[in-house]
Length: 151
Image (cartoon, rainbow, N blue to C red; front, side, top):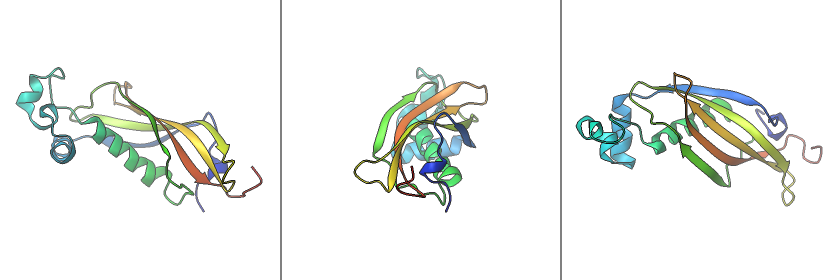
């Protein structure tokens, strides 16, 4: 068994992965899921407040989720999430930007109604190659306990 509730330590910050956004993937994602001109077309994007092509915030969230599942929660006791509390898109993600994702454990508790699992509050943080925070996501996740009743 991989990562479980007991392994998640409040106050820890863990690097989950890095991803470089290409023009092709920005346009492809936008075409399918967020077809705003500043995600699809360089000329239109130049005239936008962004002054250039930028990734959809939903694209950035999707990339971060993929890294989290593949790199941190694979073979874990993850039972999904009851939801996202907050998303902040702080700076645009541009073509060629490499985002480093961090996962910070803020709080955790064993569920009162289902004592075989716990609820973990986390904040995902994404930083570009210049060290600028570009996104934060506050959420909760549910994880099975390795030893129910011992926590």
